[in-house]
Image (cartoon, rainbow, N blue to C red; front, side, top):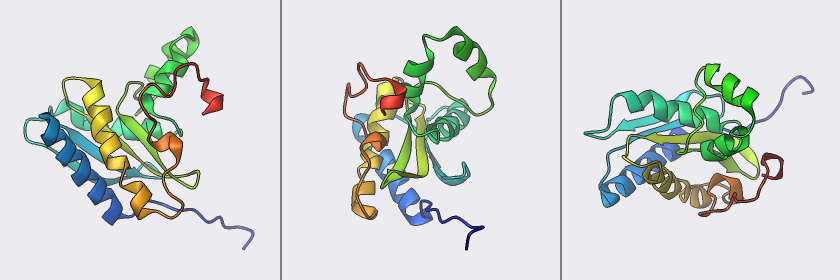
Length: 165
């Protein structure tokens, strides 16, 4: 039908498996996290607050996931806006936008099907590491495998412009 589009979204089953994997990684490295998975429309699909994870980080985890629906990680989003004073002034006024590490899009065959956001650990790198552990499940659960921008390797963005991602 000409008036409809076909899109894909993360299932609750996969979202819950991703939460479980992120929590397992957090336990392995000894941190407490809030883990949020959103569907492609920004709606909460799965969530877990580990014992000891800061309450204020609940919203931060969800906002990181929401921001990642732009199609890039939240750290990459910050790297893009950091040298533009107008963006640095304007972006913080937009509700639900978080421009610091810990949020990643979940892409299958180039299509954004959801996003993951973590917050609560003492270092942003902990959030990133736990998110990457969860994202590793996508290649096993989705046809076509994991899109490279969903789970970048360490240092992958150095020297890269947002439009190159």
